[in-house]
Length: 361
Ligand SMILES: Cc1ncc(COP(=O)(O)O)c(C=O)c1O
Image (cartoon, rainbow, N blue to C red; front, side):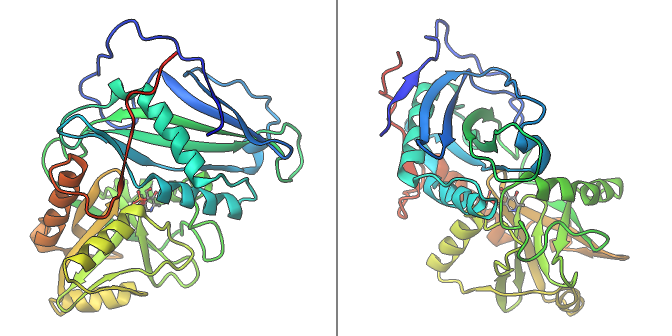
């Protein structure tokens, strides 16, 4: 492990978590920051107080979009152990995003180790109720300052932490989604499989249109033919037909969700067959009309499982499970929250412990 400089101020008073926590509203006192340049690689690791940044207006990332991020969670389990969910998968995905955007990759073990150190320092910020968590936002930006489109030579990687409330504080609630064919979010061989702000910026107009019609998220279709179902706003999608469980294959336009992977592995472990294949919106409508759509749900770090109670495509409104949630969705949700809270044994070794004894200087 490279040396970390601890610049965090000693905590003089116990952390008092705000109520309600919501999502991404509150942040812990300290961040971890490191720098990159071609001579030294990643260096200058610091755990330091969260403060505003100051950048020259010509800094490359503002203009040409060399920005990527990740989103993962740490949990306080019922016996007070602190664990992070599959951090190495998130860092691998960060590296995939980095390769596509000509940004530097990072050694996975080193990046996870640095994260464990920060979380150990900020552990008092992790809420304790089942379903609550510490959301972790790694962020990488290209910080050369000069105008002109080119690859930056210097970067910052920042870990930002935010205690978040339970997603379903008011009970497991199905969402209504709108399939969108006026706009696309990403195209194959573009940046759809990266976690980079441009994809989210491109999706905003569709989300606004969906909201105006009373739908909470967009179901995106592929960006080439506007035919195949890709993913929902911030979730991957699973469809349960009468005789098949399907999730869209990773076409290059879809973010490869860590929850998606974990749900596939769990369902396979439970003896289900999951087919990763192209599913067109026309096939979905046809199966719906035949009464063959049993359930639809989304998967993602924020909600884990989000049941879809209604899907609209053009003028067709399709109620799923009478607008309620399906059995498998709720079973998966209970399973994953049970794992997070330490009530169910982690047989896959998905959760990485945080050593809470790290000295804080
Ligand atoms: C566009 C998009 N798709 C899918 C997901 C789900 O990915 P994960 O399960 O890794 O959170 C997310 C959330 O990160 C997302 O933003």
